[in-house]
Length: 483
Image (cartoon, rainbow, N blue to C red; front, top):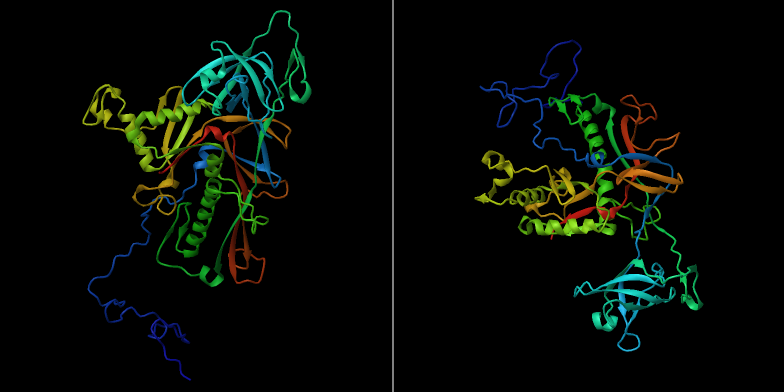
């Protein structure tokens, strides 16, 4: 049966010669056909236009943290608790015999360690009333206190009966002459005379588990030897006319982005059906929402008042002096507008006073750093929050608008090393040992492209990593969320 050549088919010839049957014809007729007879030939651009610029999103964790190996299925660290003794939601007694009674809401995690002769400050966060008092009786088991105010007849007279919203904290003690202190408690936790509760420090323990990330790119041996007219050019410098090089390169770049995105977006798995095999991991956003501070709906309209509220809250935490702000575009502009408005004299909404009254300087309102109170802030855009393929939502609306990350290191007790160590507040732990480093593995399988591991006529490029993020002292982080 004779083979009828079709356009694009190639029929071999015994001799080395050009025939209609063994080369691609470029003289087709009709609209859109390849035609050498046309008057004007197209000018072909061999390189792709980089219309999205550098498309990679990673780099955030390299700026603010570090990467360190681990050898276990879990990383555990301990964080210090507060030094001074205070309690919230303290209840006042009723009028009459219990007018000077206070009750601390004791529980499994809350015990009464206030001793006889301690001096305390009592605060009502609703009314602003306060009083100072001397502790005359204390029960460590029930949390019951009897106090004597210094400047009022009774506690109830100042704060009202059955007020369950008070805060108290110890600021010192007041003993008589010749007193002698012993430790211990009496029957049912009631303190005997001249005794004092011995306070033993404890710590809060946190943990995280690594996840295994994998990816693969496969290309057949035949396609590896096929060239195209589009020149490959990727972010990692790959070049040439073999299209599979671009695909392999983009698979690698995409995987490297996933390594960071997983550390930022990760969640613990709460689904019992898959919990055993896929426990999940706690990422940055989840850690801050669980243990840190969340600011909802920050806008330039609120100005410094809203930002100062953030600073006041940081004062109650670790008060880390240097901090970094990684923001989406609109939130970054809100900060610029807030800072530009700080001036004793301004015209047309543009502040000049901060810039030696120079209009040229005042119009450059892209602030990269500023100081407020006792804090320094360094501001930068976070590409991950602006990219349309990730959290760069339409109309500037985003559930996550930025994050404040403290700079520097913290001291924690490492359960594995058994000693206090200094670590960046934010760092990645990856699985590694002397025999296998799983920080970022890549290997080839198949029988093409240099691989010779199987009879598969293809090249398989494999990527693997096992890692988790450690967010220490999350109480010093702030997450900016949309309304």
